[in-house]
Length: 270
Image 1 (cartoon, rainbow, N blue to C red):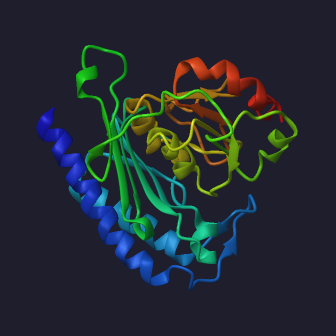
Image 2 (image 1 turned 60 degrees about the vertical axis):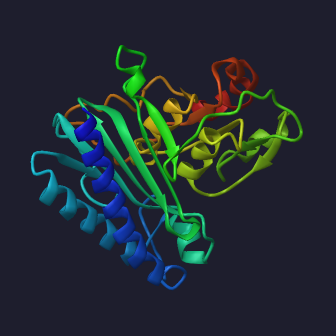
């Protein structure tokens, strides 16, 4: 297991560093197009997506790939990488430095390893999550190879709760923290993993928004709360995930679920 952990870490680190260096050349320079769902896409997204796919197939020929810009159907492969080549394309095109490259490695439908690289910020997150099992000592979450963990604090006006642009109706409620809107699903939730925020909510994340951070956040002590009955993981063979969103709340510890869930659960009923 140790050798495999090192192997997948080294692959993710080298691949995202290489891709990130090229993306920095295009950062803030490209005119985006609109996808069918109204979100933005650039030639850089498509290039990065294909480059990552090629790298995976070259290095792990038995692994499959599920990507935002490519195939959305899960083949049922035992090992599958779930890719978001640029999480935060709007930030990327507008010259806002918070955007990243997200890779999640799924085993039998469940994410067990995640790596998210933010080139502008010089921040790389990674983590391993094998659940609450006898292998739990193998779990771990890291920022630039330094262990991270969620905050144990109680909510106050000096703490943060992250929103996405589609969840601003939460502001009509009494949120017990200051609000932040970063524009990047992975960074919203990873800021909970580092202890910078106590929670965050995203209304329309797809599986490629969640796969890379799923192991990291949980290994750091955070909790995912899916606001709809249909759970993102485990992935199901033959399912097309292209049009499926999973409204999701993340909190820093289980005790805060009763504090934040009532504020955001209406997002799962839209």
